[in-house]
Image (cartoon, rainbow, N blue to C red; front, top):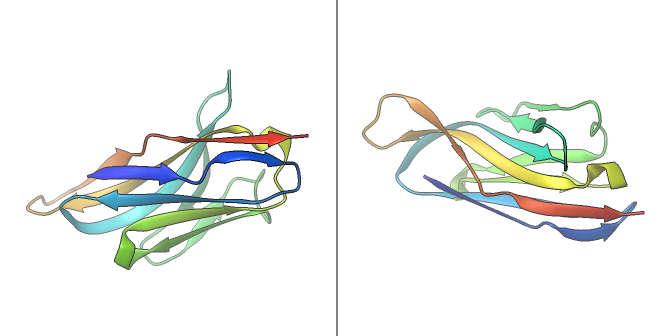
Length: 120
């Protein structure tokens, strides 16, 4: 399974970006999908997650500003980021729990990361 993240870039404070993460490969089922971020000098932190039924959860720092969604037909997860702040600057990574064809378990796969820079 390969995850390709896209949509990062440079934006001014108060602006918006939409990240996408498309999965490809011999996918049978997808369970939860998530977005993490890692700022320079900081640990990677969970930003948002969405389970197979569409239930979502968010870090307190992004509640009310970010929205995670998924398109199961496209095996893609999105992160709509509004009212961006300089402290949102980070590399954003997606991951998901995938059941590959022929396997009886879920394995976690990571995307390569996309850089989001918010200027003040």
